[in-house]
Image (cartoon, rainbow, N blue to C red; front, side, top):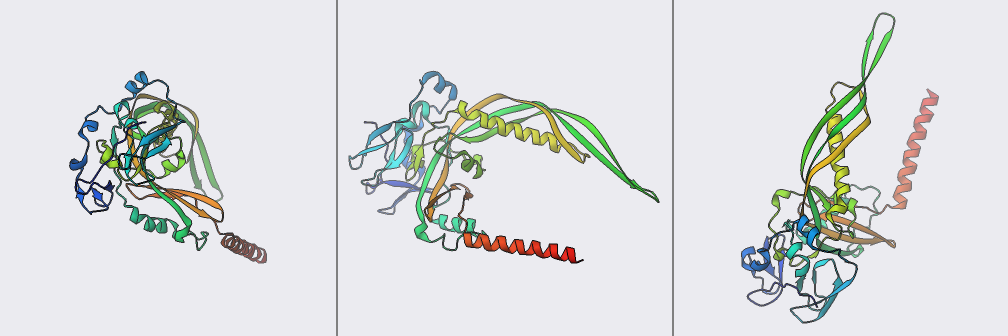
Length: 352
């Protein structure tokens, strides 16, 4: 069986959990708190951080679709989980378990952003997100609707790169004037060529196949200035996954994102034109490098009338996103109200 790392309270031996609210490691049994330096594992922390070149050269093709058995260091129970899980809880005694083999050696992350949003604040965040949603069912926020709230460190790739290239636009300028008899409009057309480049740093893409890419993108941005050196203690009390979508597989997403940013910069640089329609672009990436980090995400699952709704909350900033149910009664009331207004406007126009 594989090995795990556990973090115990020096005073009572109970599991320690990282407190997002306090920024300390807290014992829920004796109420003791400890700083990072008091609980960090120096041996794990001393390893060389992740390097994609070393990993690609030294790790053969991995198969991460199986199950792995671990032994809980607290109660001795066997815990079976999937191969990408990097931190979890023992279902028998609640002990925090960090799967050392998934976050050490060549797999040690380059950094981590600890949770800053405390789980207790999620209720207020959810209510704020739902406020003003006129078509939301009135009873959706009943507490029994929320089925699961899970704090997860999600694996992310951070790319540094440069984008260069050229774009051409079909642009127009419009001039109008009038004399005593007529109004005149003159439209001039131009073929505008742009050339240039931009440097990009720390462009994120989640490296987990089980996470919805659009959901992870929509809770950005993270304040990456708060990245800390990875240490397993930050995972204590939360769940975590290692990457199973490698950096090469995620690179096309970054390519599209960076190219679209450069294309938009070219477009907004055109001054004095009434319109500018892209007709050609030749953009490419270069000088690409990547880092591997863990970023905090709360995943919320709720049910309503037999349907499951999933939400994500940025564990650093509190930004929330997800799909909400729509009340059919409110929808039809809104639709019929809009239809009545439009019909009234048409009737008024015909009358006039």
